[in-house]
Length: 37
Image 1 (cartoon, rainbow, N blue to C red):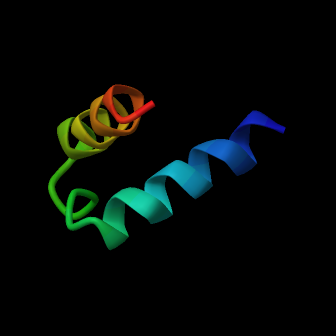
Image 2: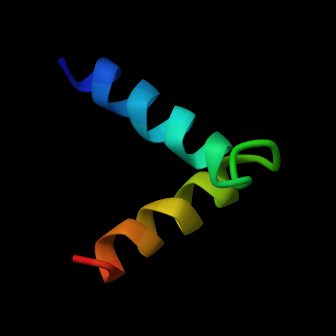
């Protein structure tokens, strides 16, 4: 389900150093993965 994907995205953002901030770090991570595709 969607919650599993959201948790996966959050975990990956934390690994990239972007999860400890707040939701803006998660948004930045999502932007990065979308730009790399």
